[in-house]
Image (tube, one colour):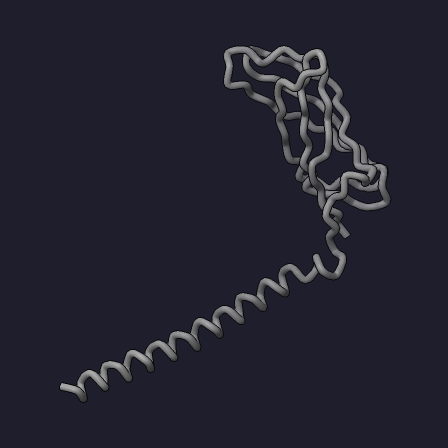
Length: 146
């Protein structure tokens, strides 16, 4: 009986060692793949957006129908870099008080000195879109394309 327990224990230890080796090798291979995939970020291919960069979103016009507002705007690239995957936010105010915000993603590249027009819809959960007198646009995020 003791020999059967000993054999079972040794098999369990052997299985655990083999499984550990397979997991370590798998982790090393996956880690290496991610390092290769994201090495451009460390080498300067991408730079995370900084709010001081001269990439500007401007509000052009709006149209409100029931519980939805349609916003037209433009992003102007006043830098010497190409930007892509730009996140734009519209904040709505009434008499200086914040009432609503909406955001959208612009998935095209914006060349230096270029402009990208956009339109997006903003829906309210109420029956009517909140009244507002001011819309402020801002860039939340963007990536520099090398």
